[in-house]
Image (tube, rainbow, N blue to C red; front, side):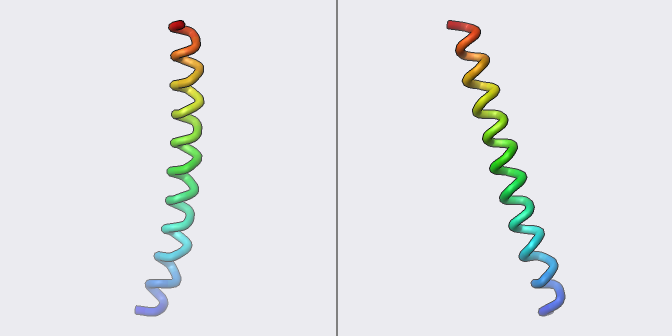
Length: 38
């Protein structure tokens, strides 16, 4: 059980970092897209 938790915890951090990067890219893409529309 402890070995499993050691694997899950770093995986959660990596997933959170990936989500933040994707969200940041999506946000910048939406901003540039709306600037082109206006």
